[in-house]
Image (cartoon, rainbow, N blue to C red):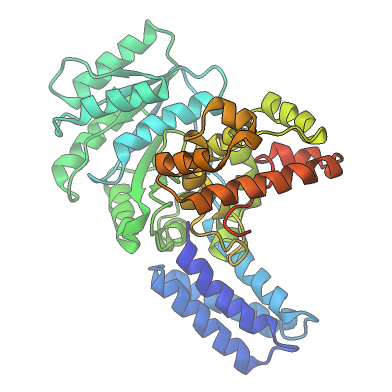
Length: 443
């Protein structure tokens, strides 16, 4: 998320941090580089101008120029300004009412239907007692209802498609259905178009008038940059929106729409889609987003992601074995699978500050290690010393790797297990955040 923009900011900050004092001349150069980085990320020109002017005003007000550490002060000024721009007082979802109604709007291809299911899953996980119903009110796209039903099953949520030929009829029937089933949240997936047209807007207005939703959320593809903001302005002008959900922020999003949306529309970003899995929806936090935009990482997200997938009982069992130096290859195999549930190495490492990882191919390497472990018999994983030369050849063939890679895994496992007994007092927290620190790839 925001990887390219983060690298550009880190290059700017590296130059600034090397200055003992900041003059108006080198301040101007730094601000030009900041401006270029933001414009290349497709941030709205007026927003870029506002950020640069505010930073310049604070710097020339001696906050930065006379600082003992001008680099840190410069970063702080940029950080504070970006957070201010992206913050909105009404950023939370409004789920009051029985049932509460949330309408999703957006152009075709923005990820609206997938987001509806993710939102239902998110509501169940984060709002205890929530019983959602997905409403397939997109009667324009033939496969929309079927797609929503499949996604709803993944989320463990019921889907209502009704028998009517109009979105309004389906919405009315869904309200009646919810009243008889104890459902307290309706998530309405409306029709999208390849472009904004009046027919789409009229349908949205009718649905909004009838359902009286607590939130009308516009689903926007973050990869479209300023186009996403222009779409938002038009939707808000014609139908009225309460906020946005930005999708595809895990892809090659340049970050411009996330920075520009609040400043241009006056509306909050409420949630963000950060992956393809049903659980990959997060509350938008401006401070954490800006930390990642500026290349500072987002350790809070890293911890939250780890907590979602780490089995506490398993971690405690592993710690006991660690203290007694009795770990086997099955233990590592289980740890690999927990890491995969968290989205793989890259998914975890992208939350760390720029330049801290050096493991861009980590998931690929771990998959090869996983294949090696899966090619072993249960007896071999429980008793690694029995893996002789012929077994290693068989394991390499079965995993599509080489004998050298199998040897490396076994060698590092043996070294690690010898160390375990000497480190019996390892911090328990290290085990609870992703398992033991295995490192593969070099002898």
